[in-house]
Image (cartoon, rainbow, N blue to C red):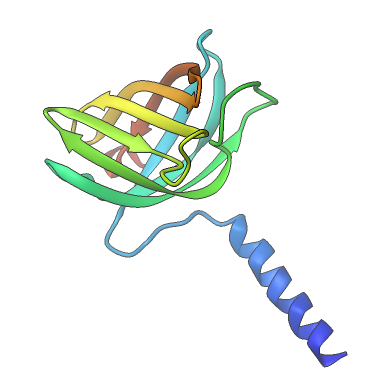
Length: 141
């Protein structure tokens, strides 16, 4: 009985934490909005990372779908991200450990706002794409 209570408490804590915004100390919080090819908002949420002038970075994301958009790949829930700033372009992979189910964000480098294209990429190539905006800490209310 004692083991069941411990498992239940751990499960409830995990459920509570999974709905919280993930922010690691020393990172910046960015607000994400993804649009489909028709300009309709399909995903919103937050990402936490520090954007370097160049090189690799990593962080976390916590995203929710708006409505029931089809074919958006794995950009809902919580996850880790890996990014790279190279030659004035920012690339962020939302599912860096997946070859056949990755959502990639591409945007020109800017310090506090990233606007570009998201792509759901699988083994056949790009499955779906749209536009996105990431607003940095300077844009917080």
